[in-house]
Amino acid sequence: MEETLALASRLHADHEQLPLALRLIANTGVKRRHLVQPIEETLRHPGFEQRNLIYVREAKARVPAVVFSALANACVSIKDIDAIVYVSCTGFMMPPLTAWMINNLGFRNDTRQLPIAQLGCAAGGAAINRAHDFCMAHPGSNVLIVACEFCSLCYQPTDVGVGNLLSNGLFGDAVAAAVVRGEGGAGMRLTRNGSRLVTGTENWICYAVKSTGFHFLLDRRVPGTMKQLAPELRSVTAEYGWDAASLDFYIIHAGGPRILDDLSRYLGVDPAKFAHSRATLAEYGNIASAVVLDAFRRQFLAGVREGARGLVAGFGPGITAEITLGAWINAAPPGVTHAPLTTTKDTIA
Image 1 (tube, helix red, strand yellow):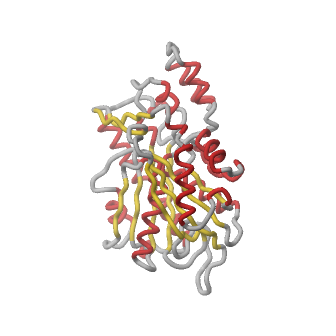
Image 2: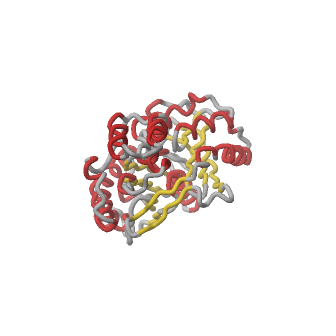
Image 3: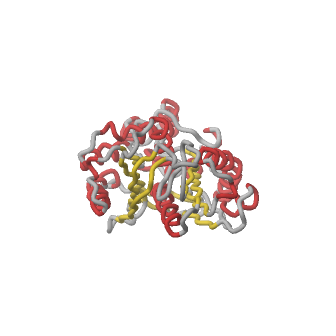
């Protein structure tokens, strides 16, 4: 954070709203972020083509390690994976990285591919939900989720609005992976999922695609959208007969501190129940679709009692909410190896 504030002060010394921008950045709660390049390289703009080449290079270099870690945690082999959901909004490849993974990492050539590129931060929740849907449609299947977000490659030195400066101090880079098992394992048993879109807000979070790449546009009204989204979370949970205010754990996309503060207030949930999402924000910044996977990792490490009921929610462009409900299972069924960061039938982890 100290380095970010110093850089902003130096780069935008003549900006008339610099004090406001610095105050907003300081109030994000982000203490540290990780970038795929040294900050000196990040601040240069070599052009859209070169940046996308960096995205491809870094994705291929960094994705395999998290994939193999997720497979090991889930106690499944690479040949056991029936589908790959790959989510990313910070670079472009066609064919998608899933094709490269199948060719180079040992997946079966009949592995289904589902790349999701335009749901932004909501894509983490969408990936979980599409994996859940696949396992329900194909009993006994296993789905790998990979989130690859290099937000720093979208830095635009000419975008100097207060919202852009805030984003420059908020977003970080990350790669994450998880396995949804159709059978066996331990974790959050996925029981229901839903998607909600707040109508009339499609231009509130978006990209302007120019010759210089992706230019992030953030409407000043976005931080206040929890007033509209909280009732949608209540609606999805009510369809399943649950009360969104009285669940045992919450894995929430941490777009910023106000998102978590407002959702806590509008749902009537103890702010302490959002601790894992806050920790992700503090230690990594807003890492887009990877937020919910890292917060989920923290939930695993903290321990969850058997049968605890919880909710996963990703928020992003649209404005879209991707919502997952489930109950925790610690003990694997007879004959199945228990492993952290795995899932059971109709589940995520």
